[in-house]
Amino acid sequence: MTAAEIRENLIVGLDNLRAHKVRSGLTVLGIVIGVTSVITVAAIIQGLNRHIQERVEGIGSRTYFVTRLPPAQFGRLPEKIRRRKYLNFSDARYLKETVPSLAFATAFAQRPSPGAGFGGRRAEPNEIRYGGERVDQIILRGVEPEYAEAIPLFSVAQGRFISRYDLEHSRQVVVLGDAIASALFGPLDPIGRTVRLNGKLYEVIGVFEKDPGLFGGPGVDQFAVIPLSDFRKRYPEVREVFIAFSVAPDANPVQVRNEVIEAMRRLRRVPYHEENDFEVVSPDFLTNLWNQLTGALVILTGVISSIGLLVGGIGVMNIMLISVTERTQEIGVRKAVGARRADIRAQFLLEAVVVTVMGGILGILLGAAISFAVRKLVPSIPATVSLFWVISGVSISAAVGIFFGYYPANRAANLDPIVCLRYE
Image (tube, rainbow, N blue to C red):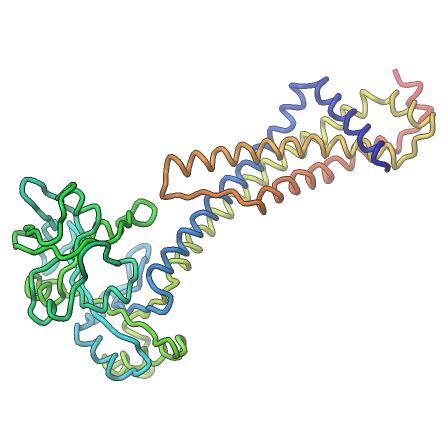
């Protein structure tokens, strides 16, 4: 088929769409719904994937965590896991002494959020005051100086971080999240000012870089960090301990991780035939968790878009069959003047592709508009439409047109020209 014939068939196809606007619009609706759902969800997931990757990099690519319980588990944990022995603050020093390939190992602890209990008592919410201003529901964490190296997200924008001197002398100093500092001090310089943290006086020595959190959840903005030695003295009831360790630049992360596991098993006297009674969490646990969460969403989106494309494809087949019937005499005339079966088949197949591609383009535009609206209204969901999915949307639409348009096109190509010319 020459370029002139393709252009002529396109014109005929568009004229046919214009002649039956309502019918054509209803036909492409299914295609629009299917492509819109694919583009929108793909844009949201792609943007979130990039956001998750940035968070993983912010945690530290060579930083691992040792915890008593598995992170981010859904549902109630088995009793065997819940009854595990607590980690100790001294475990971090033991790891550093027994695993020479570690850059550092540091312990930290966190005061439970409101509603969490210890020893049958419910924890009071953490609060911080300055003058007449008050911020509650903050996250209070006791750390060592190496903590800032372990998790680069906790980088200081003003002032300084907890020092070794602060730790050794249990100094009452605090580093605040950006949101807490802004709420308490407004335009004032917070460094050197004294705040009342859970009723005790603390000197503000630093403010963290702004970090609102992941998907609107708690981020560094909601943290207040104090020396671990002071934390242990103030909150002896907190028994949950976490350890962060980093692999030395010239060491193999997998090998070092295995060495840490062996060291922890020896320290906790785990029998050789028993499973670990602790967890070693890799730096990409957020990525793995996100992939689990989005797996079901991808399947659901695939089902919805497939139904939409199937309905749209059936509509295309139906409208093309009606078009073949309505244009039977036209087909007979074209065959009488020399049109081949391949020409007739190509004409109707091209018309079907025009219908579906128009629906695909509308779906891409609508999906891009929805993605833009989501990004503006919910900044924590950075939806982004990529060129790959734009090309995929057009390709899927064209494929639907070819698949569902072939039968009507082939039927038109096989009509007897004598019968077509006598058709009333």
